[in-house]
Length: 356
Image 1 (spheres, rainbow, N blue to C red):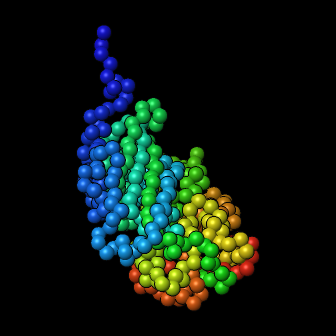
Image 2: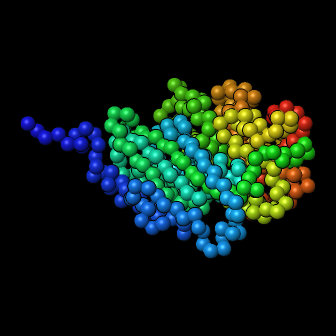
């Protein structure tokens, strides 16, 4: 009788070991001085809380840990079709660390979960390459992760991603939205496109039944790359520009609230950082959404209200800033190369977003 191995059931231990070997350099490229050596490959990652001497006293006298988890959603389907795996990891990190900075937290470390039907070292290496790039952009370390091979659960070439990030903030400098007041100005940081939200609608419009095999290769008017590359453009990571502003104004604290514009768009996300007695009035003419949004709305016959309720429409992060400092904050962002624009104002209301 023939002996049965784990590989016969669809789990390839050797391929898993090869993948771990391939990703080692990517992971270690994100290490900060707080990561204890020997973490990679162990059962758990280790991160020092006693920062290099003098730093903890400067940044954190009463530190609060801030944590969040997220995924990439059905943008993965575009990555499958394109056969590109080394950018989607940036999206995974971005979705987590951009949420951390909403509370004023500095990202410390990141963990990932990758599930596949078949272990393919090249794909795993590409995914972790992207995750590492996102972590380097965010200044945080990959502290650990899990790669699960689950034969029969995912079709060939398909995978699932999830991420988890932890950051730290000084308690008295947490951004909770409780200091927002009428007259505050709203500054928008531009997005790179759809980011990682609304892709079920994106796929229905661009990759639906009438789409041809070459649909992803077309360059649409106003876009500088083929559709597939445009749809795969990574989510922007706003950690450095936002933390730079918060650090520069750490005493006066003019940033009263921050909102990460994800699923739900401006309409659903801005109210999450507003007191219930205030509204935000957005000036639509203050910025021009990227051309890809116009193409989606026209091709899919998507109403304008629905576009603003689903997508970021070209604004990926919003800062609600004291009117007395809005000009200087905006100039600082622009001087540092961050595309930013004043897009609205806080007024009395009922916790809603209105447009003009």
